[in-house]
Each structure stands twice: as structure tokens, then as C-alpha cells.
Image 1: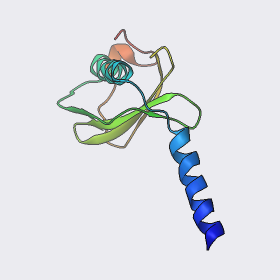
Image 2 (image 1 turned 90 degrees about the vertical axis):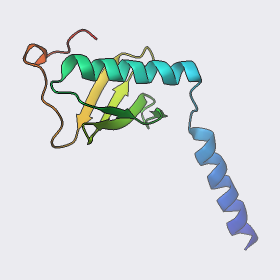
Image 3 (image 1 turned 180 degrees about the horizontal axis):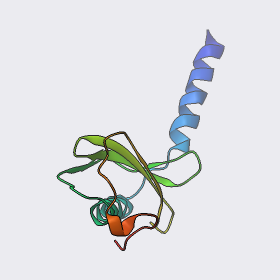
Image 4 (image 1 turned 180 degrees about the vertical axis):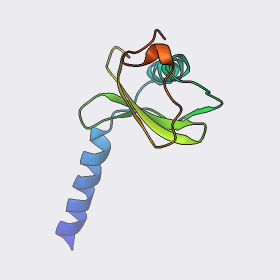
Length: 105
């Protein structure tokens, strides 16, 4: 019993110790970059909802959210440049001028 309690406490410590908490400035910048990227590169954006940024297993900043009710996930570098975006089915289409490249945002 004692070993299981100690193991559980250690597991909780490791999990909470490994999740990086970002300060308000970093959270604000990550959300602003994500919003700007989507608005600049995709058509027919009616609504954007963003969750709090989290650290990915590879160390990048991840911002999940929805656009027009369809889910996505953006990976940002430490300098807040966009690494990649994962889009769920039904996500808005990229603007013609942004096909094959990212438009300025």
C-alpha cells in the first residue's frame, strides 16, 4: 500500500513537473500568431476559438482550437514561427495564393 502511494505521488510530480507553464506574454503571442496565420492563409474564416498553449512532447508550443467549429493544432517554434498545422476534415481551404507556401501573417 505504501509503495503504491509513493509511486502515485512520484508519478504526479513527474507529470506536473514536466508540463511547462507559459507566462501571459508568451500565451498572448502564441495565440496572436496562430490567429494571424489562420486568417492570412485560409478562406472563409468566420470564427476562431483557441485553447491555452501547451508544450508538445518534442518541446514546441502547441495551440489547439477550432475554426468555424472544425478542430486544428498549430505547432510553434520558440521564436513563435509556425512549424506546422494539423487540420481536421472540413477545415477551411487555403487561399489560392497560399498554396504550397505560407502567406505573410
